[in-house]
Length: 167
Image (cartoon, rainbow, N blue to C red):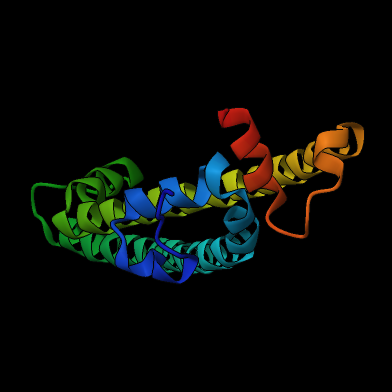
């Protein structure tokens, strides 16, 4: 039998492996999939909420950094004897070339990327939930229509179906 880490072990896994485990369906361990699904959804929703907060914080830091730099560069350009009057384009150019702005912008881009990644996993888990619901209905229908399976004890129905399909 295949052994998968339990949902409570997700934090210990590399992020790519945690993603795969959360969104994949192991046909052999279908009952465990039903059991783990709420925990996976809760864990990834928590990660999404943290990523969403990080994204908003990074956006605020970017906007604050840009505002401070605009003021700073406006003053520097006013003091520069080679510049008669600083234009908005000159200020914007200096701000966009400033390493502090570039760092804040890259932090924001990274936060947005992590937020989108977590949102994608949450969406995939919700799709997995829908697929498991449909699969459960299909298995119940198969049990009702197959006399050989109808009298199966209260064990894991999916394992019984799997064993019969294996041969």
